[in-house]
Length: 403
Image 1 (cartoon, rainbow, N blue to C red):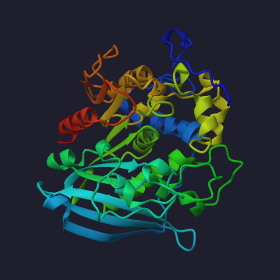
Image 2 (image 1 turned 180 degrees about the vertical axis):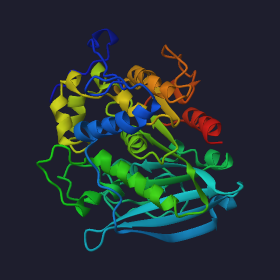
Image 3 (image 1 turned 30 degrees about the horizontal axis):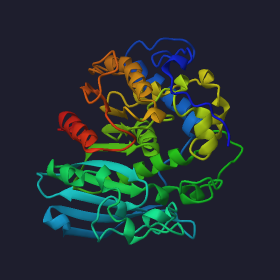
Image 4 (image 1 turned 90 degrees about the horizontal axis):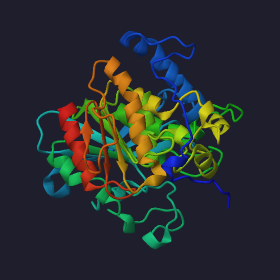
């Protein structure tokens, strides 16, 4: 097995200098909000496309929404359940994304909404027996009832602890989710399946889109559907994700400004953590073990992070002035919790340039002591997971910023 020399010692973090999000590539300073919005922000988006995530296509011309089910008596009568097939393309390579939505009955007017991808199928988010099983590939985990890469009823509700559905609905929010494998299965097959199969691919192009970019693109297609549904307040849609899907949520929020609030939970390398720190998972390790996640150009920065024209604080800055929450876990050193805070802190000047409070903390806060401005941050006790503590902060942060 390859030795990646993973570092967990803060004293061994190399000296680094972060690129300034408020300085253009040619060295000119960003002098005001207009210069950021019209010039520097597009420049940074293009740099992330070229060097990290790859270029995704625009909204497809062939995009059909089919409401498979709408049930007003879901979850013992507390919610409306909708299951929507998002059909992309035509012919044998057409893709279908199954979108699961719960909307609270206790609301007045269109509901604000949390949306995020799930790891193993919509049926894992809740034990609700009416939720459709995915027909696409799922990871083989025999000891948890998953065999032969097919979803089974045995997994119903297996990830429900990460979704706080009851609390979300009680606070007046809806919840929507898609299985990431419907968009693009999470393995390296040369991008011949999922939504990649809908488009001709130039394998020599170093900036061709990878799996994370495809997943983010799929979240935007869900938002396309929300814009057709009068029961959903599309001005108040929060996108969130955990781990690799937290990386996805950040890129979705950065590349699609229609998302009103962005939440990263333990997203680590390629997500909220600074690459230049080389703490926990590194660029070389993530590109080696998951070669399909990013564009090919990103591999040029294996053990060469200092040469990157961007770092992840600038990804967070692309979400400004919209509210952003970055969450870490004290025992999740693989995701570099300190590096996630430092990235949020380094994004603060952009938020302040745009007239928001930014992140009201200059030092890494104590465990379980959230800090909130337009950027929210906490490092909670425990490891790599989404917990009730995390959701309590996300709901309160959404209350503050989305109303």
